[in-house]
Length: 201
Image (spheres, rainbow, N blue to C red):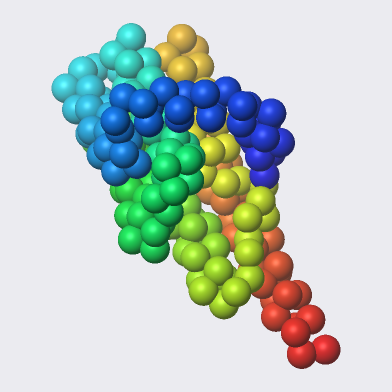
């Protein structure tokens, strides 16, 4: 929700990049595939190198690149007029997978503990599920909630970068993000509730 306004302002630059990608002969699924590759690379870095270190920073950058590919694949699909139901499903599936891979990387590298990692993944998935289920009912939840995927990626990445230089308890940050995720879920449930009621009032 917060980044949607910034996204609108950056749209001309995004389209410029998308046009270049299209001219290079790239398709949306190429970017989605790259997103997974970047995420797995981030996982490998977190697994093989000690933390906090510059390797952790590399892992964060790879995670951000995965998020960037996700932001561009949908735009490329719209630009090339290749929007399909399968593409939407595939893109959403990749999005969730990338986020889970990165959280798993933080877990196996002992940057965070298992319980906050589990709660983060569950609440993140519920945010996405609530939107998908609502759209299946004909109710749009676009922009509803204070913590969408882009916000989660950026906020989490910023705190990990800060942790590299000033070590602190990352579990606490994850718990805070879980709380904000939960608020977002409640906001979306309430939106669906009010929209559903209005149809029969």
